[in-house]
Amino acid sequence: MKQSKLLIPTMRENPNDAEAKNLQLLLRAGFIRQVSGGVYAYLPLAMRVLKKMNKIIEEEFEKIGAVEIQMPTLLPLSLLEKSNLDDYDGKAYNLKDRNGKEFVLGSVYEGLISELIGDEISSYKRLPLTLFQTTTKYRNDKRSRLGLFRSHEFILSDAYSFHATTNSLNEMYQSYQKAFNRIFERLGVKVKSLLGDSQINGQTDVLEYMVLSESGDKIGCFSDESDYAADLQAATSAFTSKKSHEPHKEMSKVAFDECKTLAQAAEDLAIPLQKTIKTRFYIAGSQPVLVLVRADQKVNELKVKKCYEFKN
Image 1 (cartoon, rainbow, N blue to C red):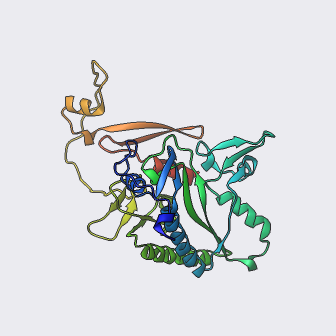
Image 2: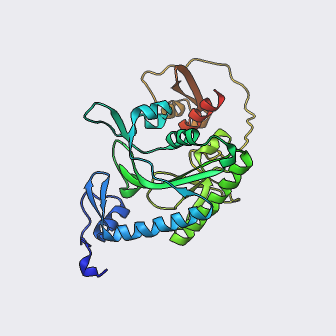
Image 3: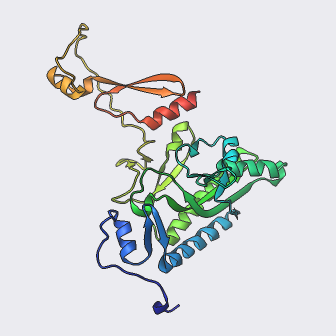
């Protein structure tokens, strides 16, 4: 294809509403155009890149025995409710057809594909079975940000495998790890593997891949003394044992003339903030939960949620 025949509308200056660096570069180089906030049109140069990426993904997934499928974008709400997909609460684009039937635009497919396989596979002899798709997904966030990193409409490759034994599942998991490593290597993308937030549920070797960047919506934690790496939400806190030899004091009530933060109260009482405790109140289902944490630290709400779900 001759360059003169391609649509490559370059720009000399950064658009005023493009804050993310990746968005600025893609717009100025003529790869994409913004249709509305979080929605983009992929132009010829971007399509050439996407096709090459998809080809690499397909080749590597097929090497481990994965078979490509294509699930619909328009999903009946009744089907999702039957699958108990809580992920759709507040995150889906809802719409109705002219007959009043409710639909959502697809973003997660675990329940749908599991139900499909449950209906079609009746013998363990047809397992293992692993499927993948690369398609457009939709995310109804309050606002888009970081360009293509956090858009309302995005392209995602997702894979699903079904097994008769845990050993078979673990073997396929290892195969997917190797496939992802080969994909990143062929794409020339440098990534770090780290424990993801699923690790909180007590699962083992649950990995995510992170590209180190100045912009993004996740934070990775890495050890200087070992190969430990984890998402901030899943990372184990560094514990340092410090024994205090101070004598116990009698409990006393302290009143303040005006409402103060814990930091201000600790300063007025001339005690370190780390020697005070803050309380956070949550509702887990219909049950109230109080979380006490040292005042100089933050409550990891994801860990609180996962802990409660795991115990119940």
